[in-house]
Image (cartoon, rainbow, N blue to C red; front, side, top):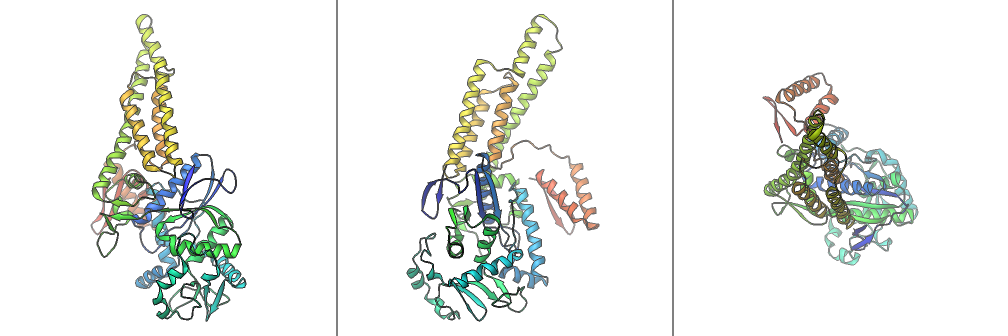
Length: 492
């Protein structure tokens, strides 16, 4: 298996620090609002990487954080007149709902920055003791130039950075030794959450948070560090500097970054009116359509979001689901034929009974040949994913398998062969986190009854049950919209 390493700017053979085990850290969202579809891309992409590594037999320790203290969270809290914790807890819960809807599995650990403050203070103190950091009136800065390899991930030159950032010298940060030094700890301001430290009552800088959480839950060295390409500089660059100066070891072997998501060929922006939350998209589409869309391009390729491309994704996913549904129908037909034949005694009927048994259990020589052909698809799928997790080519292989099944298999085939084809399409799709088995559709009356139960649960302040019902309906492709006139629902 070969992966593209941002650090070396080339594909490298994937060799883990410890045989059979992968330590993987993925930067999670800052929780001050509902997650947007740009957040969804790394969530889906690196969940799929994790699934594939597990398919290959690796034991994956997957850590993805929630940044739950940040200027935006504080601003939102002040705007609503509530605590920062209330804002972060609310949107962590909402984020988890969206992740579940998109079939993004929970991480092995989801650390929260505010629960790891002691570790951050300890790492900052180590950096100060080693001369890599310094305190100016309660603000602690990292000495960027003291780390000789600074810029190795983003491939930026420090002198070029400095000449391109002369404005920093007159922004009120002249207390820094160098304008490129970055903050590890900052004193509190009025109305902000804070924690005591040797330097001041305050809070950590953003970059130190991930260095500490990665170290605590994965150790000083990890196999994979991943996130969106917007994090390469300065966030990931600063993580490397902090971690390697503190621990004296290479921080991460492989750096994986997904490319940007554009909306109708333009950068997503609230000012342009093309800003979409995952929740808004899931009101129009099955969550699996969004996941299929995100995986339809290689993760390092820019991806353009548009209504036309989402419709194409829906049609593509339907094509796979229809093939699975058809194979299920063919197996049911074969089972029915076996049952009918088993009730006919002797003679020609006995020959029919024998044929039915062949369909149910054994395979003909021709079917053995078809079975051998199907095994080639799994090999091609693995080849695609072994080449830097190329989900676009992996989906193309599933389409080839679908075409093969549609062209070659009928109700006359053995149950065994039909089952293999069914299982193969479902299992390869599952590696990508795509749910393609037909759901048992709820009747309108069942939906209305569940909505009534949810409303009763909310009235009784049993929000856990209310959330369970909403998630159950979401899995069935039912989206809810709470309005002043009551709850409205529709099928995806």
